[in-house]
Length: 154
Image 1 (tube, rainbow, N blue to C red):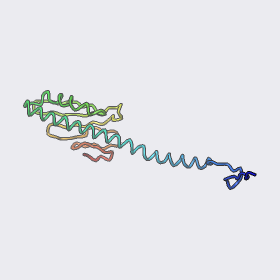
Image 2: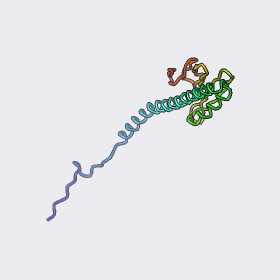
Image 3: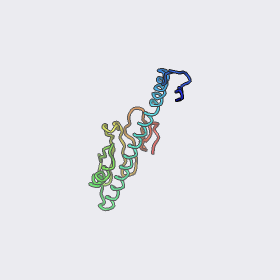
Image 4: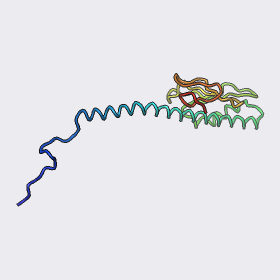
């Protein structure tokens, strides 16, 4: 004679699952975590793109200085330096708005399509770094590159 089947639930016929209140509590916790984490993540991504631009500008500056050592003029060297450095910089456009025999300025302008609209950095032949423009809420500096939202520099 087979043994009778037993229910594993302490109450026969009890429903299993989550209540609506439990699900809503979990959704609320996830929303709070997302509200904190997403802005921090976006700022981290921006800082990475800024470092990419400042590294590219430093590379272009080094190439411009090498050009000057070889040719005794900066004319033509800035454009060549930017052409070599630009492929490594995706979120900014490097330009050379001022170039003479004895001076140059390399400028990085943020690309709006990459979320970097409003950022503008420069470096010149005297190695003076400056932040000309930043979006609202970011600091600016005439003597360094602002790399964080609080205005701190690298």
